[in-house]
Image (cartoon, rainbow, N blue to C red; front, side, top):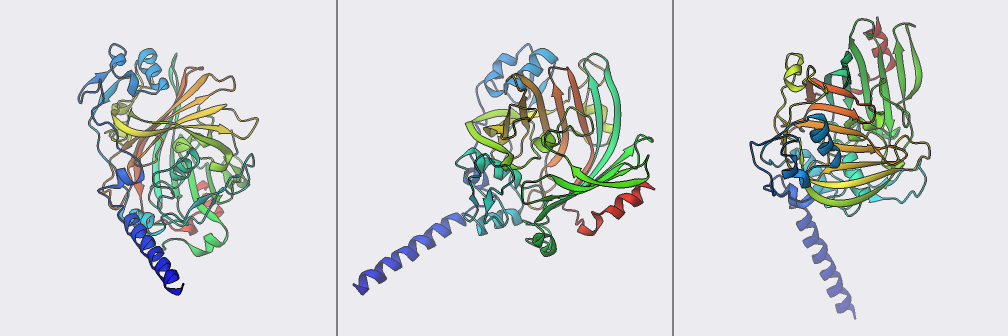
Length: 423
């Protein structure tokens, strides 16, 4: 009897060891196959170097989300086709994915929106080869973006009828990982912030025009799914006001984009019901090749030609999870969102938002450029565009500069910083 027990225990130990060894084989070289799936790099109708417009869009119709096809056929968007290139995260992120593989667990929160839906997550990709929409959503939330970053960008309000209405210039600084860190010490967390369940710090401020300069906000995001909290400095009042930042369903800075549309989705996983509709290859701008900088803005956007918002981007075959997100909030502006989530990066290059009647309302395009070094940094933000098809209006966000893993310190993200900036 004792021999049988020992034999069973030895077999169990061997199984665990073999399983652990198999898990540990995730590398930069096999990242795509291990965490997601490969695209069809040469799908029917696709040709490297071709330019897709309304005259030939039918040749790649099967590769386009409906919203993108509408932009091509009705709003003169052109797609410059380029070859597929794989993307992998940093060495530190891959190591963390292997180290903590299988530990993260989802929690079914039902209709509740203020209870945490994930446990035992430390760092890396929580769910390689996700089995359902919720796991894909958590992968997006904790996708590899580096530990911190700084984004200098423009904001343009654009009417299809009249062109550019106005513009602003902004800077957004963030420690996207105060915990779950993989690249910059302390790894995996700032202990003092972990104790307070603070997972994200942000500072954003206007640079131009003159009448907006000095406006700024600093805020924090918690592990629990509640509204972000922080301070907003009002130059006209010469004071900072404590308030909730980015409440559910509110537009950012009177643009066509909700706070939750930032990066594709800036809300909490627990606020939505998630469902994988399909896994497929589509065309998306993950190596968009757009030049950045103020001087390059007009090389990216054609502000002079109707409908005044079209960007010049390179589009490639990408593997995506087509995910439907339906809000748990009854009063939410969108009845559903369809997100095309890249299966290598778990970024959202394309998103479609539907109104409460179920009609397509907005299309969001997030374009990315190559990482400077994939072993140590994420893909760089190229540009972003949100188009309200019903109002024929858009908000464009050209990139002037983007840096990741810069070593930002938590002490910068406080009320005193925006007070100093406002003076």
